[in-house]
Image (cartoon, rainbow, N blue to C red; front, side):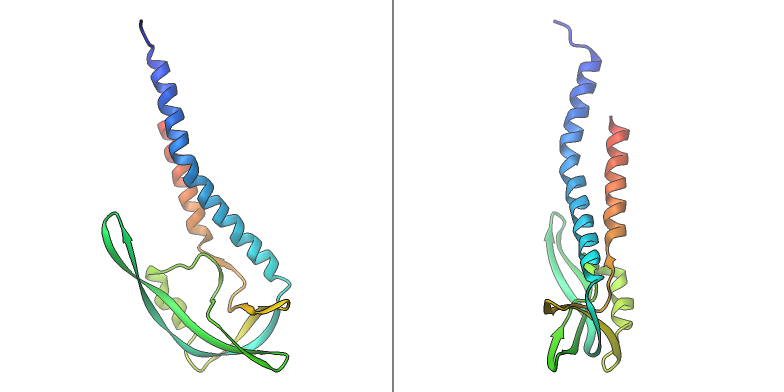
Length: 154
């Protein structure tokens, strides 16, 4: 029995879609969660905070290519809500981005400086220095690359 080349192309396309779809969905879910966090933070209150410590933290990741050491920004700040002194370390909402952006991010928040702190009025311990979702551009690029690869393969 003869099987046409179109059949194999069809099967290959299905396999490609099944292989790439979970990654597209993962990155899309991360983007949507970050956007939702930004939307929720629009109702957060603003107060003044003091940067207690700022620097770079090296994180170790194990992967298929061995052990990787990546720099991440690390900022500790203090702020007051209704007379209670609280501390936070969240710079922005969404995915934490390390690598080449770590030093410039940490440099924006030198120890001893004063910056606005945004906090959730219902849960004052939930706070951030920026009400934006860093890293969403990376998720968008990954989705586009995966989709482009998928369409090129099909």
